[in-house]
Length: 161
Image 1 (cartoon, rainbow, N blue to C red):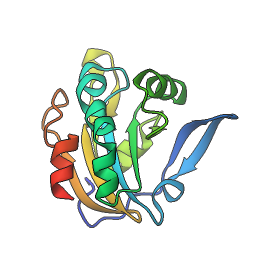
Image 2: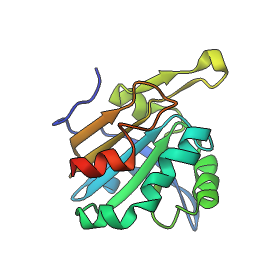
Image 3: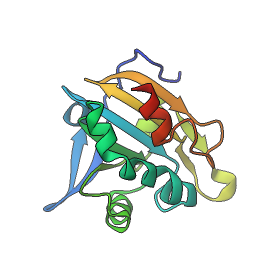
Image 4: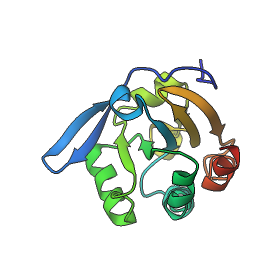
């Protein structure tokens, strides 16, 4: 079953990089008592993710703050080291949380997986954006094509806030 507006996020754990090394953060750690924009992408360093989707949010950080968004987070089915390298190379790590869903457990729990095994990429996350208020999905935008970042992009979600 796919998550929908009004649903509570499933309990899940993400790997994040800290100054002390990899650490685990739960959905409660990230979303409880906060209004968060969560971006799901098929993979770090992929062309649409790196060149279109992520930069749109980075370039509009102030606009999101004005709309009472406490944080922006991005998740992908990648390991914590890849997500950390992506955060550093995109200069977004200081402004956003990079949440590694290494085994795709969160994507599976949301019902938002994308099977790219025929391309040698395994099972990934669909491309989406959502507004989560205290753990409850308020807006959800899932792309029909993983190579597009239109309905899930920063502009689209800003218009919904």
